[in-house]
Length: 186
Image 1 (cartoon, rainbow, N blue to C red):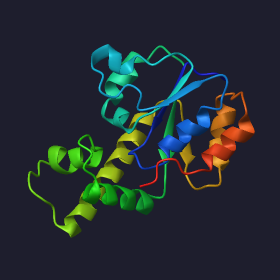
Image 2: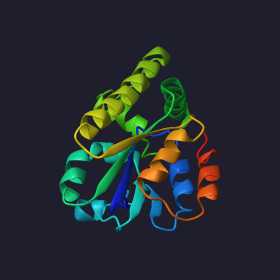
Image 3: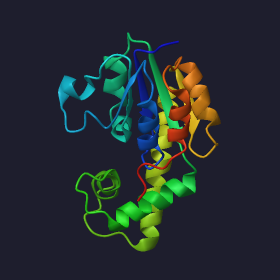
């Protein structure tokens, strides 16, 4: 089946950039990574038809996303990576990034309302809480929606199921090979 829109949901640090880079080799879908960031209102959700969008911030907009696309043929992808590897990647980002829009900094200090620094031990718990909370939110949201789970690190078997699910067309060999590459390492 060809879907009007495909939304890739994850906490981040889970292969979303690789997912999009691989999907760019499809001829029946466009694909972007965080393409509507910084937009407000309807502009935030003005995705083109037959488009794959990966953006970890969509996890904070599940209600409006659902409302905006309720009458569309949509597939949601729950993108997962090994929990500890995801935590390690976010922990590195929390401790080393100066990126102002870092989602883990926003969670650690804004959502959890901690104006000062966390101890190193607390930082690990903050990151674990973030990753588990986002996965829990995604799972609850997807419990009544058309969805598929894709696992980073399963040698592409779940990504192949995704390609079948969306009736993917294009250079599928290049698509699969690109999925196996790392695109947004630390």
